[in-house]
Image (cartoon, rainbow, N blue to C red):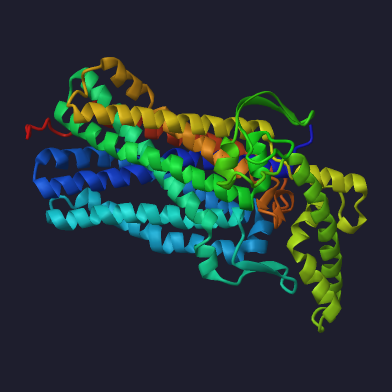
Length: 513
C-alpha cells in the first residue's frame, strides 16, 4: 500500500499533540491549585497547608517536566513536516509562539526552580509570589499558544501578499483579540482546572479510603470540590460561547458535529445520539431535542444553522471564485516586479478571499485552472471533515462535562456538611474518575483539530499543500520513534506520580486546626 505523506504528517502531529496534551491540563490546573493552597498557608499560618502545597507541587513538577519534553518536539515539526505552512503563514503564526517562549515559558521555568528550592530561603510572602508567577507563566503559555491556534481557526489581522506569496500580519491587536482565540483560551483553561480538581479529588479519596493523611486529604478535597465545581460550571458556559462563535466562523465544523446534512428550520434541534452516514448523507436513528441546537448555536429563534449539503454547494461557488483568483495571481506574478494592471489587481482583490478554495484542487490537478467539474465536486466535498469521529467525540466531551459538574457538586455538598468520608462508594467513584478529564480534554482537541479539516488555516491553506516534501518512509520512522519515546516518558511520569502518591507527604501533619 502506498504511503500518503499528508496522512503520515497529520498522524505524527496528532500523536505528539495527544501525548503532550495529557500533561498540559494537569500542569495548568495544578498551578492554580498550588496558589490557592499556599495562599491559605500564608493567611492562616497552619502547616497543613504548606504540606499540601509541597505535596501537590511534586506532582505538578512531574507533569511540568514531561510536558516540556513532549511539547518542544511539536514546535520543531512546523519546520520539519510543515515547511510550506511555516513559509506561508510564519510571519503571523510565529509571533505568538515567540512570545510564548520569551514571555511565558521563561517566566514559568525560572520560578518553578524557586518554587521547589526556595521554601527555606524565601519568606512566606516572597515564596507565595513565586507560586503566583508559576501559575501566571502557565496560563500565559496557554494564552499565547491558543492565540496561535485560534488564528488557525479564524485567521484575522492578516492578509495575503501576492508579491511575497505569504500571509502577512496587518493588525497584531486584531490577532491578539481574536474572539475565537479568547474563547478557546478560557474554555481550555477551565477544562484544565477541572482536570486538576478531579485529580486532587481522586487521589485524596484514595487516602481517605486507606485512612492515611486524613487531614491533608480532607482539606485537599474541600479545595478541589469548590474549585472544580466553579470550573466545571464555567466549562459549560464557555463551551456554549465556543459553539456560538463556531456558527459564525466554522459553519462546516458545526454541521459535522451535529450530523446535520440538511439545513433545519430555525431553531434547529440538537441530536443527542445517532449514527452519521457520510455515504448516504444522513444521520440514522437520530434522537433529537427540539430547539436546543438553534439556541446554542445562534442564541435566537429565527437564525438558521446551515446543513452540510448547503455548505458543500457554497464551497463549489467559492472554488469557482478561487480559480479566478488563482488565475489573476499567476498573471500578477508574471508581471512582477513591474506595476500590476489596475483591473487585474481589482479582480484579484475581489476574489482573493477564495484563493484557498482553489488550492483544494491541488490534490487532484497541478494547475487549478485545469480542474474539471468532477474535480471541483470532489474538492467541495473535501471540505466536509470526518463526521462520525467528530460527532461522537463532541458528545463524549459534553457528557463528561456534565458528569464533572455532578461529581464536584456532590463533594462540594459533602464538604459543606463535613461528611466527605461518609460514603466510601463515592470515594471510589472519585478515584476511578481520575482518567476521565484527560479523556475529555483529548476529545476536545480532536473536535477542534479534526473539525477544521481539510484546512490547516481555515479557508486559507489546505492541509494537503502545507506539508514538507519528505519521504513517507522517513516520516513513518519518526512516528515510530516518537511513539516509543513518548510512551517511555508517559510510563516514567505515571510511575513517578504513583510513587509520590503512595509515599504521601514528607511527614504526617499534626495540625488539626
